[in-house]
Image (cartoon, rainbow, N blue to C red; front, side):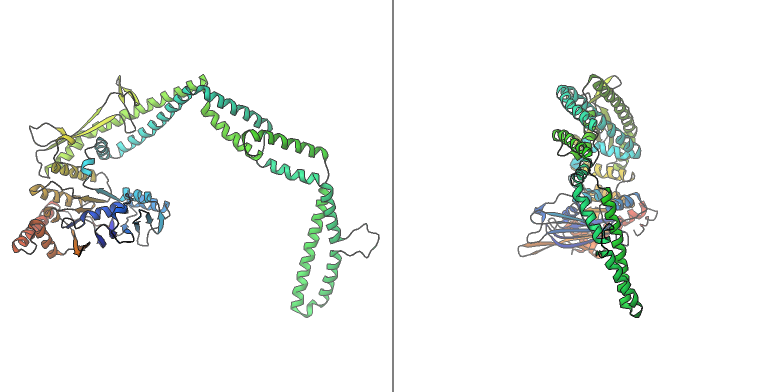
Length: 600
């Protein structure tokens, strides 16, 4: 649930706070006061396009901040928190999640989620899970066949969702394989040349069998062999300086080990008389031990250094062969093993032999049959729910002052197109795409005797508003987002129909948080919480703020909306009556107490 939103520097809004609750919240105000800017702010907050033109003149930036209260036990709460954690954001101690979005006058946009800077696309992901915004243009979108298909699919629930996902996956794999087959067939000669080049290189590399890091190791060994005498002499000289030369003729030769032994004996004799000297004696013992270990290591190193001309010749020849092959394919010998692995993978995609093309053609046909099976099952599922969907929307329209209207959802297939993919269904070649083989058309019959016509041809603005609201009410039971926002979707509606729209929105608010920007008093009367956008013109500067209305404030606002006379006793009486009737309708229509939302 969206708990609160703060807007600053956006359009006419200088600084405003919206404290929201569950149920139905309405936002009203005079024309031009900035009601729609509230919806614009929510769109921006949840990843919408950053428009520098929306930044208030003189403001450093436009900023929208919001707080989502989440229930971790719901699927939406779990998915939102998982997406936030994936992006590095963290929920507050009370389980809420803070989002923010800012836009500079230059158009630079910044987004934050749970205290972490994130791409705007992450806020969009959160918005898809948390909020559904229906603007005035959504009525136009409902006219599009793709949106009508999406509405039907959404009504179909998990069954259609799973079938659609399976079809899209199979369709993608089919088209990729078909494109690969066409490419290999058309470029057979070119691919054969590339494959031959890779095969020759692989044969050379496999014959050498280079190991990772081998050239660097051989280089180090060659250097040791080339300088074996000098290395052995250096090690023996250092060893003798530390431990002495046992072959020396005189016994008075000075070495580090002998000198350290003398130092240890001198300190040991007096160490018991002073703790500080005792500590120095201990350090001398440690140094003697280190010298002994170093002397032993030097002796072993000298013994292990031997000149081996044959080994040196072999190393130099091996490195030369590695370098010769490497120059043809990579930057250095150590890159040959990785190149060979990539070459083997690339060869698999370059094989244009008759056998390879036949195998790929068989795979394409197998995938085509899989697509056909999935598309047919998806189509059958859509046909199965189409009548139920139409009946459900028709029922809702009956409660929206269209008692005689009838909505139908028609599902059909179209013949294959010359420039698009197709499959054969019941001995007929039909067009197919990632959404299946179906064309969906929602038709409206406003009253008996009139022909059912597609929405884009036969629905008026008011009828379209009510059809869209009816669809939303129907889909709400199928698991739509927890928060629904409507921006003047009641345009073109008035009178009794407006009352019914308000009642339906109130009904929708029993299971969802609903925020409605409206100009109709009949709709505003059903609100559980009423916010008003105030416009203040100071000189040439216009600002707007948002405030919560109490019962008296609501009556005054409804009186203004009814007749433009908020101070009229008659207008106030009419507004009070409207509020009382709306409450009575809610009480009569919703006998059961509203489901309480737990604190998230």
